Image (cartoon, rainbow, N blue to C red; front, side, top):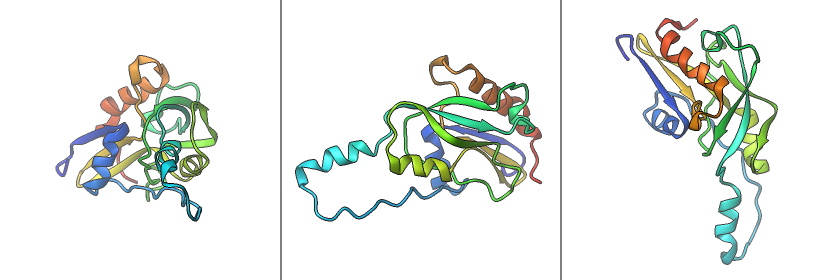
Length: 165
């Protein structure tokens, strides 16, 4: 990548790119202080904060190379983790964000909904002369979401052409 390659990460693999400091992670929304709670409820409380499988709507910039060929800016994607991507510092490098009501189906806690509202879904990061394209969700999850497949196709085909501005 340092010499001009392109790395595409999807879903939970974004955690690896964030850990290697190739992308910027976003902090989860702060949790309110609940005071003392029964130990027996700890597992249930943690389970309520998981995203076990939800469909989220992502708003795509149709003028960005990754959005080429899409007719609708709203693209549904499958999400099953709580790794959050920060919007890029470059204002042209965050082609996918969450809209007003991002959760289309599935359970997502209020805290995680707040985290969605401040994070990005699709980010392009510079790395040397190359780039990292990160999808917070799984764009081709079981082949159900055809609009999102176009995003991955565009990342493969046009990724090397995307330049930092």
